[in-house]
Length: 402
Image (tube, rainbow, N blue to C red):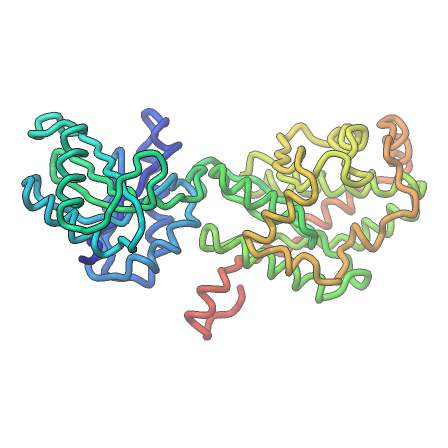
């Protein structure tokens, strides 16, 4: 027996009230994009569940794609059966024979949302368990830790039978919670921060600071490749490339060496905030992890944050490097990030950056030079690029990267 549909469970979306339909619609769009290569699959989104009608499409291939979609708590390939007890028992046995391996144990797990059905959940478990035991030799029941759990769900319109529950990505549907600007370097941390923020439903646009000739085109390409990987989540990713050379040169000319990192981050934050306002975003996202480097001490963040009142989201703030690297491997950004091409922060890092900068001192140092004109010039000279996922380019070799 082939599966004829997949039941998708919403998870966190189910806690939403009057605006639940907005989240469901966003999830439906994400699923539709992910299944663009499966034209026969039909999506039916209801208030408490989503159904993907396979219509002959490969369920295993679709399963692999559903695992990565934010907003899905879990899903189960299933067959739909009329609420006729004998038909249901036949379908359950046929499905069980298809997936069961010798020596495996099993149990039945029934759920009855239609209370008018002739059997209650305990009776369903007993009836179907007995039927399967009678028809398969050597089979054993294990209600605590079974190898196979046959799930039978009785709903008003029909019964649904499945034998596996696959964990989804969780979170909230892509682009369901406003927009934020991600300060995207070429390192390991910031792409992970972007990914985790997307998981909370934010639409994310990247801001990268480019300082030629001190940083190379290969360093820029690394960020484009990271953006391409992030685009896999939502179908596209907007990247803002900021010309930063003049500002960095002015900083190193005007600011004492041990405070250059602090001022550099302040200028980056001011530019990102200006781009945020221009693009209608409501937050700034960074890859900061508390205490990881000099600019990420509590004192540094206090001095740097002073330039804006915009909310700053730091998804990695309490994570250690190994935790961050694990996620980077999972989302396939790690190997891109470790390419040996330095970004502007790495190239210009002072030998002894201040780990506990004083806000009054950095304000005083910056007061001797008017950075505002250079900031406006950088904002006006920023290039905005729309990047598509690599998987879509592979399908259509004629498409450019952006």
